[in-house]
Image (cartoon, rainbow, N blue to C red; front, top):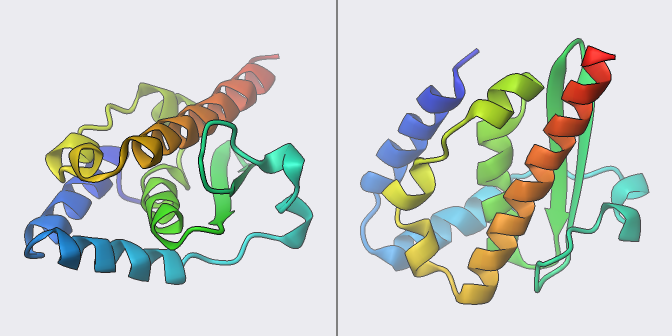
Length: 142
């Protein structure tokens, strides 16, 4: 299993190989299209991320000390961003997720090329993923 920083490095290299931002948006759209479907049980208000302009559902499950995220969105680029975040975080322990420095976001220029509302939504998504990790870490320590 690759570490979170190795996955980020891989993503940075992938984005570096793409040309201008139209190409990168298309790549995000493709990632979104390839995101595994979230279980219908999680496509409700309880799993909706607050602070996202588009509708984004996020679920996390802890299995054998490892967190697995699933997500969906009604906006195709947002779904691609969710796919990126899931790729970075899923399959790692709560401690690894909470300790992760997400330098890849700035390195690929994601924040500066997203609209302010999408950028805020991405931050809300990351906060929710970390919140799940904190909750699972607290459960493990009890």
